[in-house]
Amino acid sequence: MKKLITLVFLSFAVMVLPSCMGAGGDDSDSPEDSYGQQDIFTPRNVAMMMASLPIGPGQLREVYNAVNSSSSNGYDEEYMMCDLLGSPGAGVGDSEETKAVTRASYPEPLKDLIAGYLAVNPPAATKAGADVEYYLNALSASGMQIYWPYSEDWDGEQMPLVTFDPGFGAKSNYAYEIAYDSGGYKVVDSVYVDENVAASRPVWVINSNDDSGFTPMQMFLSGHDSPATKGGEGKVKNLYMKSFTMLRQYDSWFAGASEFFIKLGSVNGFYASSEKELDLYTPSVTDLMVVVKRKYVGQTIPYDAILISDFSDQLDKLAFLVTESDGGTRTNWKCETSVKIKSKSYGFDLDIPLYSKDDIVWRGQLAASFFTSAPVVSGRFGDVKIDFKLE
Image (cartoon, rainbow, N blue to C red; front, side):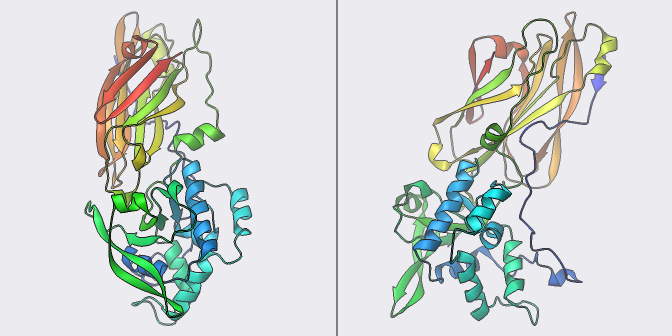
């Protein structure tokens, strides 16, 4: 007998946070007038604009605080334009209460400098009569952000180079250097920048945000508890992911950290004694997002995240998928998890979501016995290593 289940319960990291992308709204009558016009602002011209601003210590601290807050919440070192313009100093994942506090912390936030710049230098190819508010809304809705790799090494004083993600997996680009000359600021072009430069001095990269719609594991663990409910006879066992190691970089450094999704399909708390009881159970998918900064390649990162809160002795095979997120169109991996009743296996079909551009790090079935073979078991799954513990 095979039980077909195509509706999947996503239990952890695909918990969508309220996103500020598109926060500008759309009060216009036609698509051409939409605040979502991304051709108004390109990463290159936003980088040039940032380097043209009279940035001082207050604005540097604002960006530093924002990327540090994002990092503390489990995201990359990023400061989204929608937060920069709506909640100065706020990081991705900050609560509304935190944003209210940060908004009052900066007497001259970066958004004021941007507004002043746009009043004098409006973007080309915009609608007639567009004002500064229109441009700010378009920039907020663009999905772009400031990415500051290795920000924790900043000395608190040095001005950043400003560059942008050129795409196509590039490893180097030119940057704009902020220079004070003859009583004003000017942009010095053609400053070479690669990851080694970014590791040795501050570099701001204008790129696109890819992860703000998901909740990383660090934030989930800090704000939620995973209930372990008692199911059958005996002590309930929980399956934990104890550590995660990224063994190679997956993206160009301009794109930032690697965002991994760990998806485990199983039938949680399965204690059926006959085929008739199979209808009482449905499979679920634990879906965790782990963000690994580039500097941590090869380093073991400890976690204590529950993958299954009631690991039954009747579990047989579990579906396991690890991807590195690169977006694209949504698709599914059709797979199977199975359970045992009186030594006979019964399958449950699953559709586990992924995206067409994702790097599939590893996918397949894991025997339940793998997790019970030692107090802590380690697995190499493509170019990541994961430690599990059943207790």
